[in-house]
Image 1 (cartoon, rainbow, N blue to C red):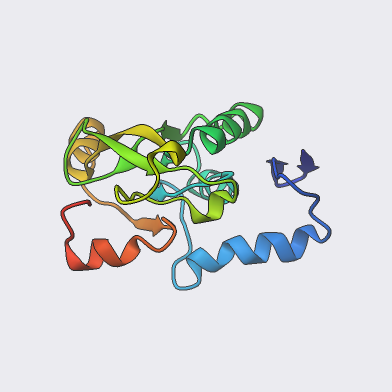
Image 2 (cartoon, rainbow, N blue to C red):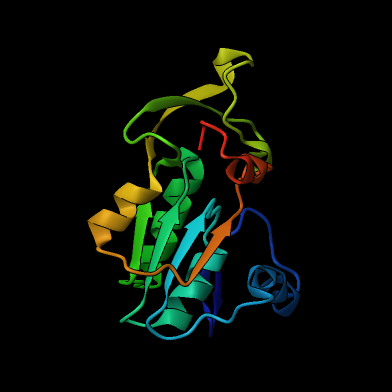
Length: 167
C-alpha cells in the first residue's frame, strides 16, 4: 500500500519514485485532460492507478466505468476503490467483447501483464470470464457521450481497430 495525498495506491512492488509513477500513468491522457463531469471508460484497469486518477479528475458528477477481467487484479482494484471511497466508479469483472454475457477463456499467466483472450493455448492456464458489450454499458448507464476511453488490454487493442469478432 502506498498512502499519498493523491490517494491510496496498491502495487505488488514498492514504488521508489511516486512522481515518476504518476507521470507514467498520466501518459494515457497525453492528448486529453479529464474534466469535471466527464464519462471515462477504463478497459484493462489493472491495479487501478488510472482509475483513481480519472475518478479524482471527473469528480462526483462524472463517472469512470472500469473493466478488469483478471480475478486477481479485480480484487485489488475493488479494494483500492473502497479505500479511496471512489463513489463515481462502476467496476466490472468482465471482458469487453462483441457479445453480452458470453463465457470465454481468459489466459491467466503469472505475469498478469501478459494475460490474453486466446482459445488456442493450454486450457490449464485459463479461467472462464463473462463478457459485456459497449452497447450494454451505454444503455444501462444512459450514456449520451463517452469523453475518453483508455484501452490497455495487453496487445488486443489491434482487434478493436479491425472489428474482430472477439470484441
